[in-house]
Length: 340
Image (cartoon, rainbow, N blue to C red; front, side, top):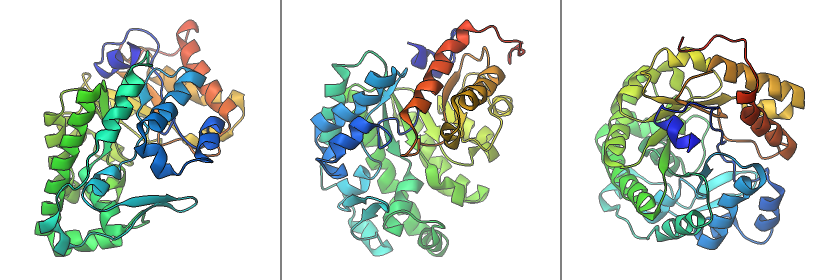
C-alpha cells in the first residue's frame, strides 16, 4: 500500500496523504456524535472509537487511518484519570509528584483500545496507525496536570531531582511499550510517537531525558515507527540515529532541506502549516504543490500537516488538500527531482 511503501522508502507513485487529528472536531459527523457522548466515552467505548476512526476515511479516502484514542490513556492506566474540558483541553485530576513515583503501577487495562482496533481493521482497506505519547511528553502532562505553556513544574522537577524524573520516565517507557505492543497484536500496521513537548528542552536535556527512551521504544516495537515533535528540524539528524522508520516535521522548516540531513532510508512526513487550510482553494493547492514539487520522486515522503488539524477548518479545504495530493502524479512537474 502507498503509505507503508513510503514508510519503507520504496514508494514509486504519488506520495500518500493522511493528516494528524484527521478524526476529530472539524468533521460535522464527529460533532454530531460528540453531542451525545463525552470525549472520554468516545475514546473508551470501542464501537464509538472505531466509528470515529473511520469517519475521515469514508469522507476523504485518506491513505492511512489512525485509531481514535488519546495519549493520556497511559497516565489513566497508572491511576491518573483525565477528562477533556471543551475550550480548555485535557485535565488530570491530580498531578504526579516525586513522592508518587515509587508507587506507580498499572491499575487499569487498555484493552478497550485493542478492541477498537479490531473493529476498525475488519472494515478498513488502508493501513491503520496506532499511536502513543512519548515518555517526556506524557510525564509533562502528568506533572503539569494538563496542558502548559512553559512546563515550569516539569522543568523544576527535572533539574532539581533528575533521579526521580528518570524513574518516572522508566515507568512510562515500560507502560508505553506494553501499550504499543497491545496495539500491534490487535492489528495496527505502524505506530506514531508524539514527543510534542520536547520543544521545551535544550539539546543536552533532549539527549538525556528524551532520546534514550525513544530509542528503546523504537527497538521494542515490531512494526514501522514514526515520531513527531515540534522543532525537530534543530536535531533531526540525531533523531534519525535513534532508529525510527520515519520522522514527521512541523512547518517551520523546508522539508526538502531536512531530507538532505537524514539517511535516505528514513521516511519524512509533513509539513503543511495547518493554518493554510483557512485560505482559498487556489492558495491551498499552491502551497501543497510547493511541498510536493520539493519532494517529487522521493520514495520515502508522506504528505501530512505540520501539526494536528485545527477544529474549525472547513471540510472543503481538506477535500482540496486531498484532491491536490492525489492528482499530483497526473500533473507533469517542471521541478527537478530531489534524487537526480
